[in-house]
Every structure is written in structure tokens, then in C-alpha cells.
Length: 611
Image (tube, rainbow, N blue to C red; front, side, top):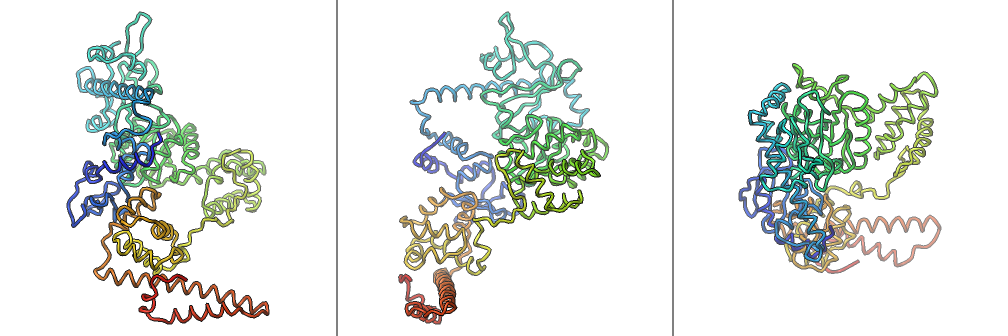
């Protein structure tokens, strides 16, 4: 789905941020803004602020901030197109390409909504069965595994009756299309033409998307016959590589605790949640996919993989590492006792403390992979050392931090007792054989990145002054006018504020509110949060006008000092060459010295003059 700027603006205009935020948290009036407990981190004192006038939010605790799209993306874990579609549906806005001129899209949407309705009906049917007398065996099984009734309701657990057509008959009585249920993998048509249930005498785990809509099912056998688990096939509303079991329940806990615990199975999720690890989720397969990794990155940057302690679990950890590489999520591995999964550990007496120790002892993926690589070879032999080094190529190549990468190489060299250069050579050879999308030819990482942040060379006084000026220009039209008269983009040295200054000083919009909205609409995540803070933070004192003047003069004075230093370097180089310094350079130097010796009043009187 691609929407033009006009459609995005229309959706933004019709989506009241205060109303939407109020669906998630309680807001109370404080001055011109509204305050509440932040939904993105744990806190006892409200630090989450919403500006109804500016349609912006900012949390002074965790520094999350932005507009209505940012909020929906963060709270629901959606991409921008998904958030746009969500808000457009809410506001009744028809996005381009989705009107009457696109019947294919309309039919697909109607079919999708119908499937969601059938899935919801089936989930309710299974839930009712679990509470019925027929579900006693399923309830006994859950109780034997320590899964309490509170979790049955939270995760909408259910029971599929042992009969051949319990669900099919219920669907028929409701007048729902059995062909749709067949697409969902719930029923199957026999040769004689009638439909029968595919899930029979099974504990049922509904699988939901991040918005809590049921899209698939997993069924665990309660007897020894048939496969242990039956899962829904992929269909128009379910792709197992895009979904996490339990994420709709866990996402708030993931945000608050700023971590996610990844397990393999449904029962592992329930066991964790029952012991207050509510941030647990399970992949729909054995390993994590890149799409699943991207989904989690919207909620946290910290992932703990608590897979089964066997070879399959180790392979799942490796594949998960590949999927998380480049996502910005730091993956650590929880080491469990051999042959056990989280549910096994937590079922033991003293299981919760044991699992907590395992969580606290989680190791970074490099250490996990390196221990496995060493255990698989004979390090007393040269070939074993070479194989161990080669086995680490993928892990080292994925590390973007040159300091961390260098430390990894040092660690490998020390353990196999060979020079670091030999390890680098071995890794480079292994890199070429990997044929990765991102091939690393130099594992030292010594080269300087071209986008080095200039902020590291900027004094705190300069940055503070730049911040005051940007905030003032986005709050008052008079400050915006005066800033455009007196200031220049080159006066700003902080990378972020220089970018904002360029857009503000060189733009044509004269209304600060409209200018702020335009900047936020085009900004990246970090810039959106900073813009929201600048606009909403009520920290400009009553002497705001004098502060604006003082900060403007500070930037001009610092710019003149930088210019003088540059000029003096040039003049020194000319003298070293034995040449005569041009008169115009001497005049420029004298003018800068005079300017720097002047009072604040002389700088104020020079407003509007350009160098």
C-alpha cells in the first residue's frame, strides 16, 4: 500500500492523538497539556505528556515522542503503512488504490475480514468447550502442568471435542461458510461431501496477531494417538514466519521490562507467564525469521533465547542470530540444563529460582557460539584450530562495532593460541566462502566511518544554546522571524540541530505549529522524539527573550572564533611557505578580532548582517 502525502495528512488531521492515547492510559490535565503514566516503560509518577494543541506526545522518562503515527506504531508494534491503514480505517479515510476502482483489493479485504470472523467464532467455540464437562481432561492436563485458570482466560485456551463434527456443526448452525473454515485448517471436506473437524480431543492454543485478532490455531493431543501437535496451515490471514505466539499478551510487559524471552513452544510461554515472565513469546517454527525479528525490534532491543537444551535448540539459536543480525536487537542465550526446556525447568521444585539464575546468566551469542565451536573440534591439532576459527566467521562478520569485533578476535586468538593476524586471515578466508549479502573483507574494523557524529567535538554550552534556539523558533513566530534574520545554518555544529536548523532557517513556513508538524512528518524516529521534546518541554524561563538573544550571540561568537582559527591556520601556512599574507586576509582577521572584542550590544546591533 502506497499513500500520497495528501492522504497521510488527511488521516493525521482526522486522528485525534488525545482520544487515541486515552484508549490506552488515563490522562489528566496539567496546564495546557495532559499527563499520564507512560505506556512504554514502568513508572509511578506520570511523565508522559500529550499536547492536544500540537498533537504531539513526549515521555520525559524514556524519551519516546512523536505524533499520532509514532504513537500507534509504538503501542501496536506496527510499521508506518500498517499504522496508516489502522488510523485510516478508524477515521473512515479511503486510501489511494483502495476505492471502488480497485475491486480486487476490496474483495481481498472482505475475504480477509470474513476469515477473521470465522477464526474468532472458532476460538470462542473452543473456549466454551474448555469450561464444559467435556473439557475436564484438558483442564486436568493444564492443572497437572501448573497452568492456572487465570492463564486459560488470558491466552484464550480452548478444547476441541473428541467428536468428528463438533466445530463443523456449530459453524453450520451459525450460517458460516465451511469452505472458509477449511482454508483456516479447522475442518476438511470428506469425499461424501460432509465436513469433519481436524482438531479433535485436543487442547487448543489460539494464535493472534499483535492486535489480538485470532488468525490460527495449534492443537495438542491429549492421548497418545496421532501427532503431538497439529497447527494451522498458512492462509490469507496467517503466515507463521511473521507471527509470535503470545505477543499480543506479552507486548506491554516486553516494553516495560525492555526485553523479550523467546521460547520454542506454547507450553513454554504459559509456564513462563505463570511465573511472572510475562514477556515470553514463541516463534511459529523452530527458529526466528527476519520478519519476526523486525517485529520484536519495535518493542525492545534485548532478546533472551531460552530454547530447548539440545542440538535442535542450538541450531534454532544460530538461525535466530542470523535473523536478528542488523535488526538492532541484542540476542543473548539462556543456558538450560541438558535435555530440558523452560516448562521442564519451571515445573520442578525451586524451578522459578533456577530459571531466574539461567536468565541472569545468559551469555552473548559470541560466547555461546564460541563454546560450541571449541567443543566440536580438537584444539590440540592445527586443523581443529582452523575449523574453530572458520566456524566463527558468520558471528564475527555480523558484529558492526569495531571495538567489540576486535575483542572477539583477540578472544579467539588467545583460546587457540595463535597470533591475532592469523585469526584475521582465517576469518577473511571464511568470509569469502560464506557468500553473505554483507561481506566483510577487513575484520579489524579500523577504518573511520564517514558519518562520524560531529557532536563529539561540540561543547555542551554550544549544544545547549542550539537547543534553546531551535525550541524557541518552533514555539513562537517572532523568534522564527528573528532567527531567520540573524542566524545561519553554519552557526549550528551539533549534527541533529544543524539538520533541523537547515529546515527551519531555509524554509518558507511562517507558522511555528505548521512548521513543527511538517518537520515531524518528515523526521526519523530519533528526530521525532527530540522535536516533540523541544516543542513540549516547558523549561524556557520568563526571560525567554533575553535567553534567545544570548544564545544567538553565543552561536555567532563561536562561529567567529572558528572562522578566526581557520584564518590564522591559513595565514600560518602562507608564512611557512615564505609568502606574503594577502591584505584581504589581514583585514578579515582585524574585523573578526574587533567583532570578538565587542560587547553583547554590538552583536545585537549587527542582526541581519551576514559575513
